[in-house]
Length: 113
Image (tube, rainbow, N blue to C red; front, side, top):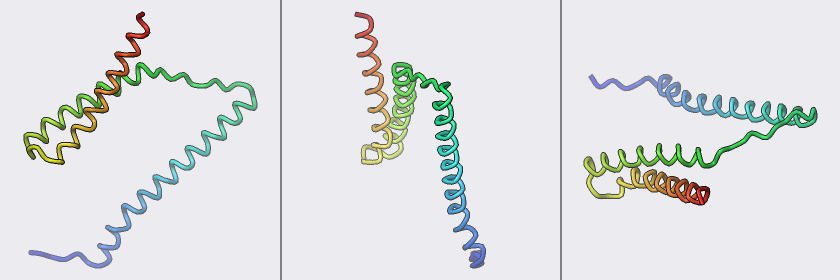
């Protein structure tokens, strides 16, 4: 029962991802445009406050998440595929996570002294 798709169905299947990408790009464009206009009006009114960003908390959270996901992927890929270049899919996030955790440790060590 190997039935080929009708040509119209193939076209529709090919168009769906394109439409999704275009619609996503439109949503992102209007979000950026309206956010820019909002900030501009707030600056003109003198009510704009720059959002604070806590780099240490971000590096700790991102380091823990990337480290744990990278470790899980590394172990899984090592068991499933063995030692080959596919293992980089787990080693790269693991290395980034470890780097962020080292940064957090260094900055907290500087803060304590």
